[in-house]
Image 1 (tube, protein in one colour):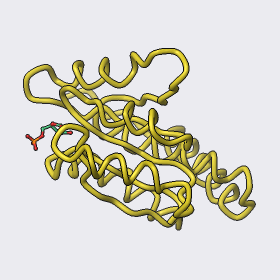
Image 2 (cartoon, rainbow, N blue to C red):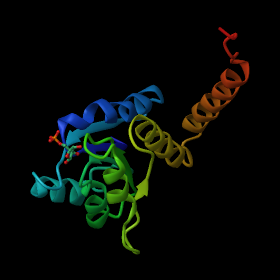
Image 3 (cartoon, rainbow, N blue to C red):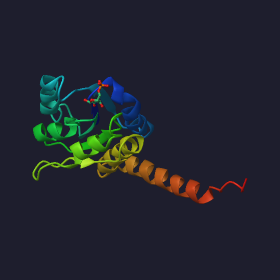
Length: 161
Ligand code: RP5
């Protein structure tokens, strides 16, 4: 596996599956697991400790509310950790965002947008990192960006009602 996707709860999967789908579309090998910083701290410790040795190149971690999973993962492993704030019911993900982004100096955790866009962008960011040493993957990323550019330019606005 190249990219590990972890999340605090099965309830995060509808958001985090967008990261998995994006990696899948680019042919990047991924795995996904529920690893809760609060409910299964022992699993978090072993997952983060073993990640580099198992060959993972980075970890995408999604969590909502008191979203300590990305930061705690980054505290344990020296792999790049890409944090996705999952939209919470009570505070719409602002709690998740602030929990992930406000890391103390010394333990960097990349932070993406709340929800689906963040999950997709975390995967694209992981792909961009991996593409530095993978010419075929770089070609796919460039083709994706070119197609996106063309699609947006070709889009037409609806007529007035
Ligand atoms: C966090 O608490 C999870 O990441 C999830 O976003 C949130 C709620 O979890 P559940 O109560 O739905 O399991 O740890």
